Amino acid sequence: MNKNATLLRKLNRLIILVVLFNIELFAYSQEYSSVLNSLDSAEAEHLQSLVEDLHPRIFVTQNNIQLLGGNNPTVAVCEVDAVNRLYENNPLYNEIEFLRIDIRNNSDLANTFSPTLMQSFSSLDYLLIFFQYDVCQDMSSSCLVPIVNQLLNNEQPQNINVIYRFEIIQ
Image (cartoon, rainbow, N blue to C red; front, side, top):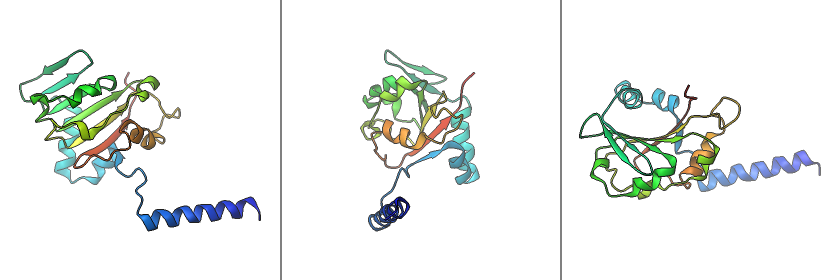
């Protein structure tokens, strides 16, 4: 039997397993622009505003949680090496609708976290994993889905839209 026929049989078996067992392969994270296009216009405008406009926000680092722009933050930005701080019981987290986790280099990929442990984020709608360097090494986001899954310990957070974005900050 030639190699192509063997490979085709193995591929067919995998497809059958996926269909029979309804396996979701990395289906819970989406690219930012795809999410914007899938939302109705009001929701898309709201998400875009959370991403791009100034809202009361907190910045979470290993050593500090800094509040900017008001007492009721709706946006949080977290360095990936400080994600354990997101597990804390903190009233500042209660009204956060949008959480951005910044990934700046390859060493940041060693950090993982569990969104299910973020109990104080009762209003969280969107979790953006923001890649700020060329992680795929081809100026695209083609490799990011499995990387996002690995960062999230392959957990699928309930009622949270997981989004990823690639943009090199100048």
